[in-house]
Length: 191
Image (cartoon, rainbow, N blue to C red; front, side):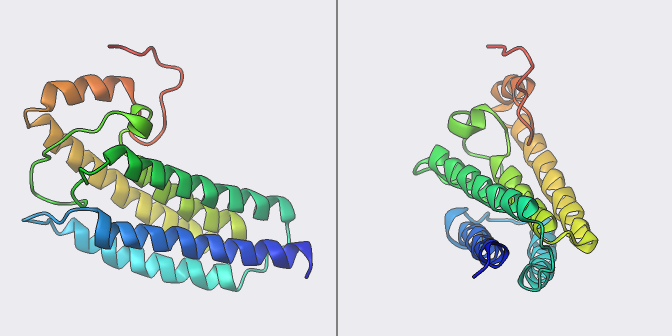
């Protein structure tokens, strides 16, 4: 087995594990809302379509550039790490699934949430980007754009929901010192 073949097999395995974990989260980790918005259907259907497209190109990968294949593996591993740090930060109090119309009943600001407000969406976005880098397929860039738009939209709705609850003031302070999906490493931390 050549290095390139081994890297491609590793990428295939990491992509299956990453997206398998995300599906597990959607089915078993996140709590279902009593009222879900239409956005949840967009996430499910767009996600399934984009996932099939990603897998097609990953499993038919023509990229022979070892450096890019290593970067892709690193991104998948980073994505998985962020995902599981996000799960851990919630402990026994699991968050509600995206696009629920229910008001939030807790605010998590510790662990990985001390750096970004939406680490799950960051994790998913990194995994989508890993597929683009692994395959060098421009069409996969479209899958990244579609899914990131949906994640940002869901995040904005969730934040608006937090602002209108008893967590509003605490959330606004938290929002000032942490990035949505990119950490604010260079901002002054305010207490």
